[in-house]
Length: 149
Image 1 (cartoon, rainbow, N blue to C red):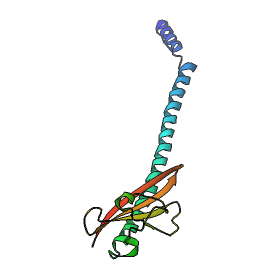
Image 2 (cartoon, helix red, strand yellow):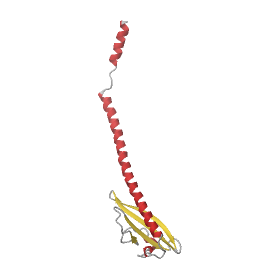
Image 3 (tube, rainbow, N blue to C red):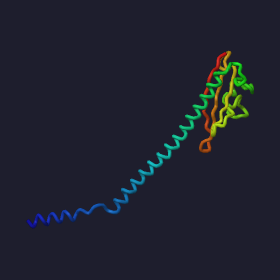
Image 4 (tube, rainbow, N blue to C red):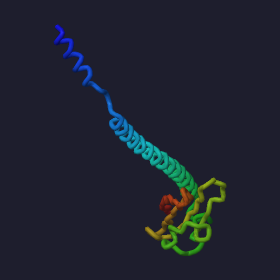
């Protein structure tokens, strides 16, 4: 009986737990994983911000396009005022656009360009261009429509 008792004591003394080195290694791996997750969160937040702005730009372009397409074919807003035709469809500044939305839209600017007979005869091709600046970079959303006579 004494022998069994001595064996149990020896087994118990061999169990030492974790060493300091093992704990530091585990904490390092955990910290590395948490940093990776934090980096993903920052990227996701930035992506969501861009998506929100892009959705807003899309809605503004759609609204402007609907207004322009509901006008008469000969309306002044649907004239190619600078005469650059299809070459000027993507010009996106107040100086080069055929029309500009004068509303205060915060970070967004809306322009449109018109080209007559660019796609088919008796049609006007209309590009609505929404621009904004995000993170120091110019962003653009373009929507195109064709208005028949």
